Amino acid sequence: MNMKKNILLLTTLFLFMFPNVLQADEMVTVKLVNYVGEATELEFKLNREFFSFDPTLQLQEGVTYTLSVQKGSLYLQENNKREKQKLNGPFILIPEKYNEEHQIYIDDRPYLGAMEFTIEKDEFIRPVNQLPLEDYLKGVVPFEVFSSWGIETLKAQTLAARTYAVSKLNEVINDTIQYQVYGGYTWDDSTTKAVEETKGEVITYENRLIETFYSASNGGVTENNANVWGGNSMQYFPVKDDPYDPTHPWDFTLNQTQIELEKIEWDKFNWWDELEEKDTDITETMKGWLQRNGYPGDIKILSIPSFELSDDTFESGRSENGSITVEFMQRLFEGTVLFRRMELKDINLNQIRPMIGGTIFKSYLIDSLEADDEQYTMKGRGYGHGVGMSQWGAHYMAENGKDYKEILAYYYPGTTIMDLANDAIVLPK
Image 1 (spheres, rainbow, N blue to C red):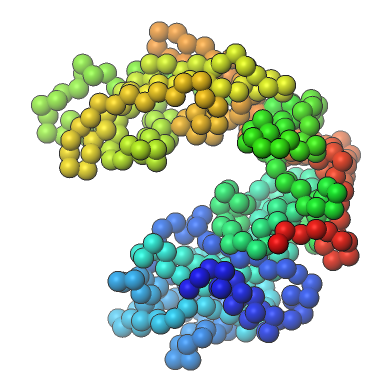
Image 2 (image 1 turned 135 degrees about the vertical axis):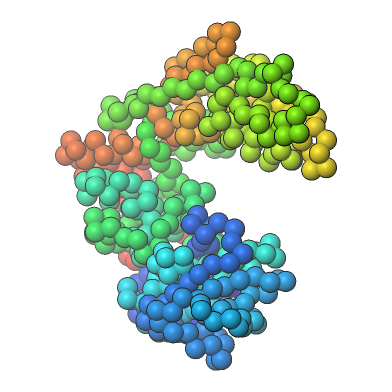
């Protein structure tokens, strides 16, 4: 079934069954990827009564069911029973009532609202959750910021999350950092309060929703969007010093030689399996990058003979370009081993950072990159791209007595907070 048709179908069902819910709220449609992965089999359980389109299905509250994929079809099995039932047509579960008591547990994680189980890539089960916007946000904000932070910081984060979600209402998003991390009905009292006390509030510029970019820490200097992703420069993303951000210094080292060729025992039966790089936390990410960029099969990183930055920096002091060379062995699926050399020369660092990993190479605000005969050492500040709101900066602004409106005005200057229900906001089509 076409995903856009599914959105319309689910929304129509909600309109019919829960008109009072939709009068006050928009609907969000979320593919569950983060906690489900690519599963050919998953378990679910219901709290309270749900119904489906199949009148022959009588699902019971509290019973664990297993969904599986066989030859492109979904099969349902009640645990502790041998027989499986083939499901024909869309498998959608709708709560008898929309409230917090009606929950669907998928692999022990609870969700509210409707759930459709689809087949992805002809072999994986993909749950798709639909629920009201404000309840979706209650499952997002505690996963995007520390719930122990002050209420004003939580409100600022809520408006950033709501503005982003509203801009995606006509899309099927997922529950990962590709969009926003969503944990289902795993709410926290503090973040729920922040959502409820700012209901419907979004951030706008000239009556249009803004791009509410944020990062954990900007290292003491904000960045303009065009310097990170290209495109048009947005006026509400200026480059300026941020005295509230605690800078978060970081560093990492990377050995030039990862595997010494002269020490490989080529005549051993399992010589490949015994090889291990020195910096596995980095090389595992590097292998994944290579596999996604034209080098399929098994990979062993031999060395990084060059790694350097260009002299060019942006106004913020962030580094712009760099170069890296990687030498590696590639074992093809039939067993052939090839020696490879991949060189990226004077390219944007946003193509190099993913090779090393964003949790290690934390930002582009780099203070130094030094090399000796054995390894590279990089030092920098911040965590993330630095565009828009610094979450740690927002935390310390609130600690210094600023409210959420002041926080947002500081990180998105020139913007206006508007209300979805009462103000004339130009929404995406």
